[in-house]
Amino acid sequence: MQAAAAGFALGLSLIVAIGAQNAFVLRQGLRRAHVLPVVLVCALSDAVLIVAGVTGFGLLAAQLPGLETAMRWIGAAFLTCYGARTLLSAWRGGGALRAEEAPGNGTLRRAVLTCLALTWLNPHVYLDTVMLLGAVSAQYPDRLAFGAGAVTASVIFFFALGFGARLLAPVFARPVAWRVLDLGIGLTMWAIALKLLLG
Image (cartoon, rainbow, N blue to C red; front, side, top):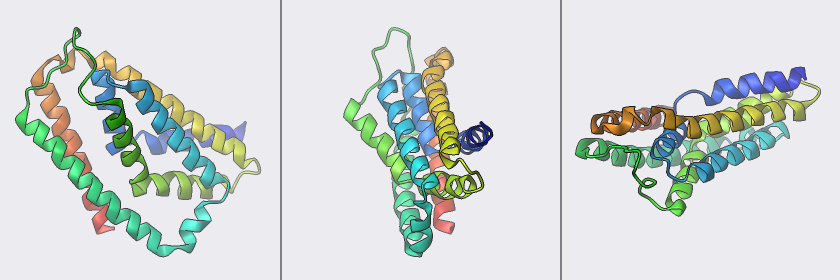
C-alpha cells in the first residue's frame, strides 16, 4: 500500500504541470469534442509508459544517449508547428462556446492522432514516466504496486481534466476567452519547444 501511495503521489505531481498534452485535453473538454477517446488515449499511453519504466525499460534510454537528443529535436519541431497553429487561431479569434453548439470541429481521427503525437513525441513524457518513475520505483520491493499507483493517478487526472473542463463552459462562451486560451496554449508549447532545444 505504501508503494502504491508513493506512486500515486509522484505520478500526480509529474502530470499536473501544464503542458502540451494537458492543454489539448483541456481544450477538447471545453469544446466537448471527442473527450472520452482523448482521455483514454492519454491514460492508456501513460499506463504503457509507466509500466515500461517500472519494469526496467528506462535502462534502454540510458544505454542509448543519442535517443534523448533525437526525441528532443522531434518533439521541439512538433510543438513549434502546433504552437504556431494555435497562435494563428488566437490571432484570428471568432471562437466561442455555446451550450447549444454541436461538438467542436475536427474529426475523431484527427483528435486521436493529435493526442498521440502530443503524447509520444514529447521527450518529457519519457523522462518523467519511463526514466524518473522507473528509477524511483526501484526503491520499493513491490514495483508493480508503485506503478499501479502512478497509473491510477494518471487515469483520475485525465478524466477529471477532460470531463471537468465543461464546468468552465460559461467562461468560454465569450470569444475573448478562447483567444486567451489559444494564446496561452501556443506560448506554452513554444516555451516547451525552446526548453527542449536548449537542452
